[in-house]
Length: 322
Ligand code: AVI
Image (cartoon, rainbow, N blue to C red; front, side, top):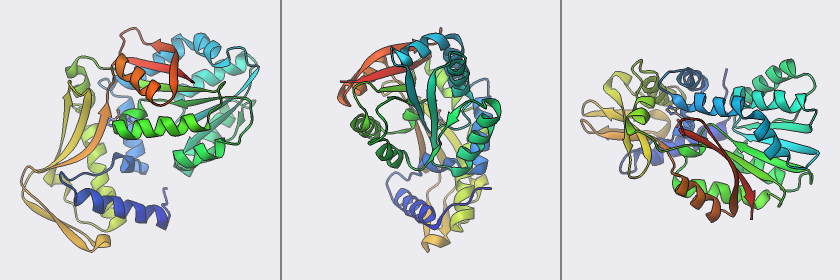
C-alpha cells in the first residue's frame, strides 16, 4: 500500500495547480505511478502493441556477453547503478550473467518508491543469494549527489526502458549533464532509447485496443480525486494519443467530452473545461541516431558502443564521459 509523505503531497498539489492553470492544461506523467498506475504499467509492458519492453529484453537476452564485455572493459570490478529500476526484469538477465562470470560487482537499484525498492530487493535476494545489493531510495538528482564522492571503482549507470522519453528535450539534457558531473572518466552511462519508426506502430503502442493505456492515463484523475479530494468524473474524459513524425514525439491527452467544472478541495478551487478541451498528459519522445549523438555530445559524452534489436526499433547506447 502506497503512503505518500505530506511533502510529496504538497508537491503533487502544487504541480496539479500549476498544470491546470497553464495553457494548455497539463498534468505531469511522473504522477502516473501510484500502486494502481504501477500495476497498469506492468500490464502495458505485456501488451502485444507495446513493443518497447520486448525489444529491450531481446537486446539483453541475445547480446548479454557483448554488454558484459562493454561494461567490464578491463576493469576487475564495478558498481552497477540503475536509475528507476522498476521491477528489474531486464536487469535480472544481466545480473545472472555477471554472477556466472564471477564478476566482483554491487547492484544499486534506485527508485523514488521505497515500496518498489523493497520489493525488488526481496525478489533479487531470493533469486540471487550471492548478489551484493545496495538500494537507494529517492529522487534521481539526490541519488546522483550521493554518488559524487563514492568509490573509485568503475560505475556503470543504467537508465533503461526509454524512461528518458518522458522528459522534455530540455530536461533530458539537464539530466544527462547532471549525471556527467558525478562521473569519472572511467565510468559509463547506459541508456535505452526508443527509435523513430512507422508512425502507425508507435500510435498503436500508445492507444491499445483493450484500453489499458487509457486506464493508465485516467488513473491520474482518480489519484487526484483520492489524494487531493477532487471530483473528476472519469466518464467525462477520453484518452487520445498522437504521434508527430517531424518531432519524433508521441503525446497523450485526456479530452474533456463536455463543458464541465471540476473542484479540487485541497486546492480550494475549481477549474473549468470547455467541451473537447485537451489536458496534455505525457510525452514519449522517439529518437533518430542524430538526436542521440547530439544529446550525448551536448551533455559531455561520446557514444562508445550501441546495441540494437534486429528490427532497429530500439537502442541501448553506452556513453563515455569526454
Ligand atoms: C515509462 N515510459 C517509458 C512509458 C512510455 O512508453 O512512455 C510510459 C507509458 N505511457 C504509456 N504507455 C507507456
